[in-house]
Image (cartoon, rainbow, N blue to C red; front, side, top):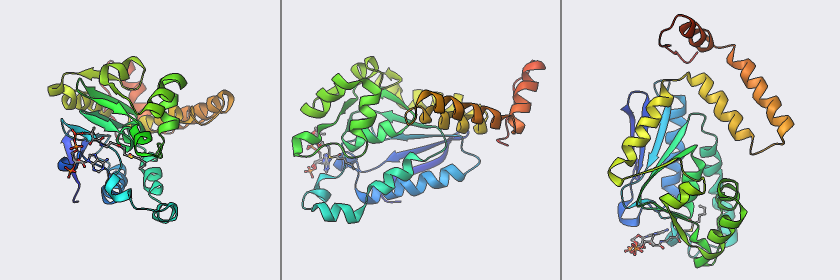
Length: 257
Ligand code: HXC
C-alpha cells in the first residue's frame, strides 16, 4: 500500500486505516481509493476484526478528491475511469466503520467521512463541500448524505457556498457523534470501536444493514426488513449466548457465529 497505512489489530478486534498523503492533505487520488477499497474488502473478511476506523492526521482527514488528477479530464474520461464503483464498494462494507476526523474533511473527504457509520471529530475539524468553488458539485454522495444528515437548508448553504463548518457546528446539525480536543479524537474513536467490538458481530452487521435501509425505503418496507433481520439474529449462536449470559448474570462471549 502506498497511500494508506493499515493496522489490522490497532486495538483488540479494532482495525485502523490511516490515509497517508500528508503533503497533499490526504487528497483522495484514484490509487488511494482503490487501496482503501481493497483493504476494506480484506478487513470485512477478517474474523479477528469487528470494527474499523478510518482516519487521517491532525491537519487533514482528507481535503477532497485529487483536483490535480481531475483538472484536465473530460466527461468521457471521468465516465471511463468509473471511480464511483470504488466508492460503491466501500459503501458495502459490512462491519461498523468509524471516521476519526481532524482538520480538513472537504469534498470527497467529507463524503468519505459520511460514508462511514459514525464520525468522531476533533475541535479543529472543518467539514465542507467546496466543489462549487472549483466549478463542479459534490459527486460522491455529498448532496444526498449531507442533506439527510443535516437537513435541506444547511446542506443547500454548504453545497452552494462551499463554506466550511466546525466540528462543533457539525455536531449541532447531527453530522458527527462527538467532538473532543485534538489530542483525544483517535482515542475516542478507538473507545467507541472497542465498545462495538464487544457486541455480537452478527448482530452488528444485521443492525447496520437495517439502519442503512431506513435511508432507502419507506417505513413499512423498512420495518419489514428490520423484522427479517431480527428473526435472522435468532439463527446465531451469539443470540443464544447473549440471552443466556443475561440470565446467568455474566458477560457474554460472542464468537460471531
Ligand atoms: C489535490 C490538494 C488538494 C486536493 C490540497 N491539496 N487539497 N491537491 N487535491 N483536493 C494540496 C495543495 O495543492 C498543496 O500542494 C498542499 O495540498 C497543501 O495545500 P494548501 O492549499 O497549500 O494548504 P492551505 O493553504 O492550508 O489550504 C488548505 C485547503 C486548500 C483549504 C484545504 O488546500 C483547499 O481548498 N483544497 C481543495 C479543497 C477542495 O476543493 N476539495 C474538493 C475537491 S473536489 P502544493 O504541492 O501545491 O503545495 C472533490 C470531488 C469529489 O472532492 C467527487 C468524488 C470523488
